[in-house]
Amino acid sequence: MQPIRREEIKPIQSELFPRVIASRWVFFLALYLTFFIFSQVGPNVHILNAFLGLFLLNSVLTALHFVVDLRENTRAEKLTDFVGYLADSLTTAVLVAHTGGFNSPFILAYAYLIMMISENGRVVEVLFYGLVFLATYFASLYLTYGTLLAISFSRFGMVTCLFAVFALRAVIIGRKLRLQTTALTRSKEALESFAAGLKASNETLIELSNRDPVTGCYNFPYFRRLLNEEIERAKRYQTSLAVLIVDIDNFQAYNELFGHQRGDQVLLQLVDIIRQNLRDYDLCARFIGDDFILALMDTDVDVAKIVAARLSRAVAEHSFYGESELPSKSLTVSIGIAVYPDNAETCQDLINYAEDALRKAKLTRGNQIRVYSSIVEELRENLSDSESMIDTLQTLLMVVNARDRYTYGHSERVAKYAVAIGKEMGLAEEELQRLKYAAFLHDVGKIEIGREVLNKRENLTAQEWDLLQQHPMFGLSIIEPIRGLEGLLPIIRSHHERFDGLGYPDGLGGSEIPLLARILAVADSFDAMRSNRPYRAALSKEVAVTELIKGKGTQFDPEVVDTFLKIVDRVEDDQADAAE
Image 1 (cartoon, rainbow, N blue to C red):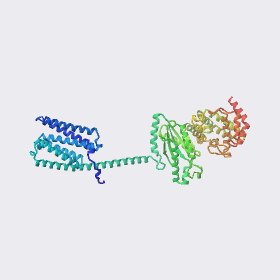
Image 2: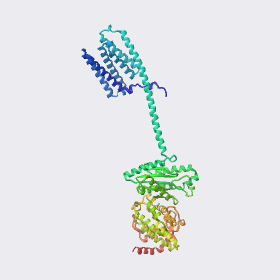
Image 3: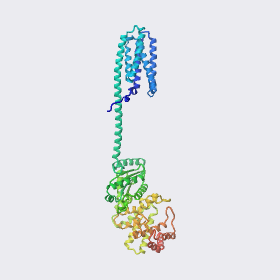
Image 4: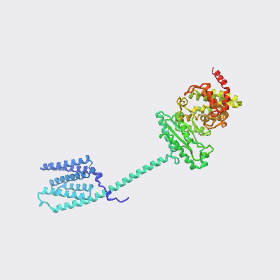
């Protein structure tokens, strides 16, 4: 420890001041009571009154010290000290004068006062007050013996020397006490500083232990703990909570091509994109490898899909280093979603179901959003042979119809239009069957889209439109695992592609679009125009035909449109007859 500098030494008075004042008051109260008892045996009433007056003055000063913080005013402090010690010494002088002078036992009160001074003051103060005490002591002797000649100066000198020795000893002890107090104060401050630093370091270590070292977001164990807490909160307040697992498509190929350092940079950029698309109180954590797990508070399935679509679009639009050299030409993400309490009510089930949804999203070429659906899962498990296919497809469409009043009848009509076009174009029976089934199922992906979006009368927001454009991919992920329906996948995936290459989801154009998908696109658009929608009434056949003609070569395959125009009247009549 470094040596204590002189300016660091602080009087003990600053810390013990109230106790010192209180102890002096108690001491002189005891002296007063002693003198009161002593005075009862002699005619000392006037002296008793004088002593009482001095004691009351001392009491007032004591109260003043407690009521007003005189330590903030040095002059007031010193003045009060001086008056107080003067009153103390005069009180002692009165006691000594009327209890025998040199023989008075109260002379020891001076020793007590010297001890108080040496404890609370410095050497100069001890010398000053020592002289004051000697003066009052000499005055008390004069009052006792009446003349200076009666005073034994040798005895007075001896008492003075004793006082001096006592004062010197008290000063030495007081200085040691002050040094020790200062040293203890410095040690205390050092310990407090060390404790504060240790606490800060401990908090930093705890924070670091909860963070992924590469991305800086939460690690999975800490996320699981927070998710459990949020589920309990959701139970308490009866709110929903969505868990999303985000996986980077083709990330292994990216790491193999550019190395893990570049891969880590991609992870950091992805975390930034995720944070920009989440609220401050949502959670983001590193899950496994290139997977991230998110928890969105107070979020239902429809909002979760909108957030996921926004996140997917932001990743697709972001420019990652070297992504154009990948076979896919870009880095995208697949997202699995599970929602409390719709899908699960425990932390582990939510995570498991979100993983299951992610696996299904990854079954195709990626860049998909998939919501866990137990209904569809049961249907898949119950589908055992191809003969039950039609019933299963109709059941799926009934689920969709519960969300979109227009979809099921639309699917039946589109199937009839599409098959009629296919027959006119001379397609084989096997292809006509595939076309029929694909027409039945082309909108099954809408099972993942909420009623609010499907039946909205106003214009869709950009986020809602992005979500709606995902329905071919949603449908693909539902159908793909079902044995026997593999041939429908390209048709369903591409039925919203445009002949000029401006469609979705893959931007295919011309002959790149499967023929059956081109047929389905014309049939789908015609029936959509001829049907009532939440945002408009049905168009007439003439207007719908005009729109098809306008779309030749841009939205639609000209050959398919021309073929449909040959049979549209006949097919419309057949539809009317069927309705009757």
